[in-house]
Amino acid sequence: MVTGLEIEQRDGVVHAVIDIGQENALTGEICAALTTYLNDPPADAHVLVLGARGPAFCLGRQRQAQTPADLRTEVRRLVDLNAALPTSRLLAAEKLIIGSMRLSRRS
Image 1 (cartoon, rainbow, N blue to C red):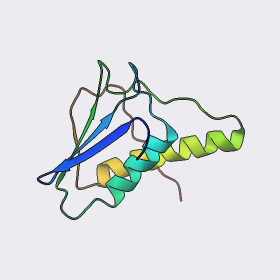
Image 2: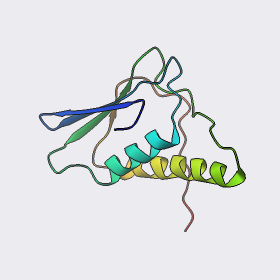
Image 3: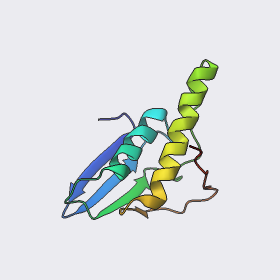
């Protein structure tokens, strides 16, 4: 279980709810958990509904990095999550998403 992320599955529908205060700023752990889920969903999951508690879906990320290496890890988690979104067979958003962007991945 990841702090700030609730995942529940019923009848093939998975609800992933971000719940970290008013802004719902993503943590590195939430990004990693969602990426793993999108890249390798359970066989009986057909739709992932991504939602959030509170007025905002997500207003960015929590800046936790203390060193350049930590920052690279945080950014990599965001890039990995962004790359998993369009390739997953699951995904629907429960609230309006503004300002999302597609980052290309370099090999």
